[in-house]
Length: 340
Image (cartoon, rainbow, N blue to C red; front, side, top):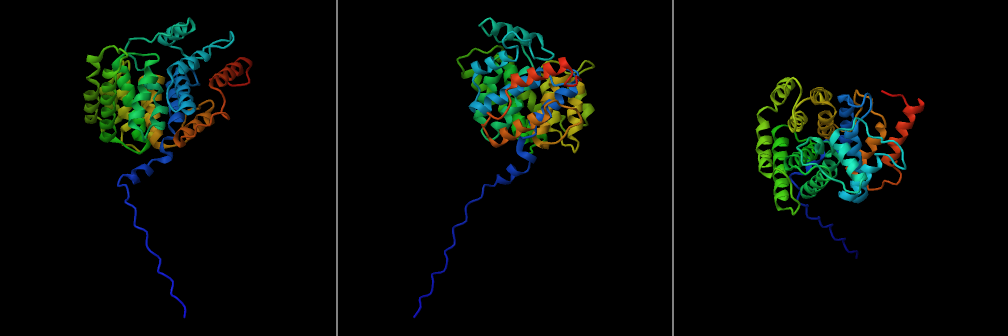
């Protein structure tokens, strides 16, 4: 007499996360942000056919995160100094603004001194932070603050930069329109709470408290044509101050089938910095693709994006940023690398 085998027991179905499908909507889940950001930088024209200091600093932030999983402010300062010329070599920064020159000089003197002036500059290095910390809102805010205050301690500038990082993170999951902007507003609010509780003294806290509401009001224009968005946030000379980041966030949140157009509008309106910020948000959603602007070292930017997306912290096989920039400088000097 044979015994009948026991019927297989069914495993209980695991409860499905109702939000899980959202995490599969975006192409490459943010990997396209660094290349699109550099493309917006090139489109802005600050460095005549190459990316400028904006992308150079953003790349340093990316390496910092890949190597350490966080932002070490002293180490980031050292990396910034390395691009300013090693062993007596010339600086490799392109289109260096006055505040950056002053900071690098202070770092060279052994007393790196951040500026208290309000500035759009910290927002330009938030792309890598948004991609890496896209599932970690608390870590995102901490990294955004740390990466900003290396050079800038104006609270409004830091809060807006945090909102940009939040916009990139949301775009990694295909968020658009009012949802993306409201999420960015919430991120700015969390950043301000951290700043208020920080022992580090930030400048202009009272003024900075207006930032979340200012971002919330942007939902009123996000569905307008691009020309009206630009008109609402800039004049004939382009957006002023932090309006450049607000413009980039709205363009990045716009519901459009033409991501190239949004980056182009950002770059035409606000130059390399606004073009780069717009590109980081648009690229996080659009994924890895070729943009119409020639970007030197584009495969490098694409690989940085892939590793940020995958949380792949291996960088030993990647070139050192200072060496990349020194190679470009030498190539332009001897004609082996076309300039412009």
